[in-house]
Image (cartoon, rainbow, N blue to C red):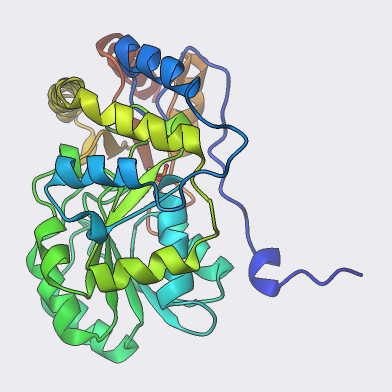
Length: 352
Ligand SMILES: *Cc1c(COP(=O)(O)O)cnc(C)c1O
């Protein structure tokens, strides 16, 4: 009999059911494709890759492009296949078997899952009923837990809220571990910990091309931190983990920052419109600084989810997640998609 590690055997797996419906608003992707000019440039660049050779191990060109984009030293950048691989590498390097990782819930379930896969013990600190965190409460719970690593996602998935920046100090002062600020949605939000990460070797920031860059299919993410931390990550990750085509695609995409900013502002204005419409309908929303909205109605969430599906609209049913009974998450789509959602929800709620 094969003996699977108990951490893996206990795992439910991470699936967002992909149902074939016209309006898919369940995985926080961008509703807009990247610009055609980007695709043309990338298609051309592929021909120049020396395919018989291994790719450059530390992606120097992409690293330099990111360094210019964020105005940070290239030595402070680590890059991997999606920010999930970034987070896994951070965990393998600074947590791992038997070490303690703190997460705040409700939060991003992959933080818990990847921590368990690498054998770390997960300690949960509960958010308040309105999904905020109380800084003094966090201080005392962190002091008690004494973790090697703390995850904070801000804006937080799935609540959409930005935490108070003072939380960073609370974490630094009450632990001796590494604070990982997951900024997958930072371009939609109000603050970034990048400056803090550059001046402290106990804070790192992870970012992704999956959301604002409209490149979820590319699987590209990166981290900004002190060179001392970053060096260890490059040492821990598998050799040649970043293929040459991906390195090029990432570098080329950064030439289209205006398009990215334009998509972000369109999504933010749609988010505000949808959020106001929900409030007008009397629906509870968690105020969002991201490209999605967590909401709940007086009707059972599974019923709402099913009724929306029958209207051709797929949202994420978060009802079975820790602390989220009754809640669903809508990814902001195009104007038409959002209208389809609002109409579908209105009729779903009316049925009582
Ligand atoms: C979507 C998301 C990511 C992105 O992960 P990738 O592996 O880069 O696609 C990371 N963190 C959070 C909180 C997310 O919601």
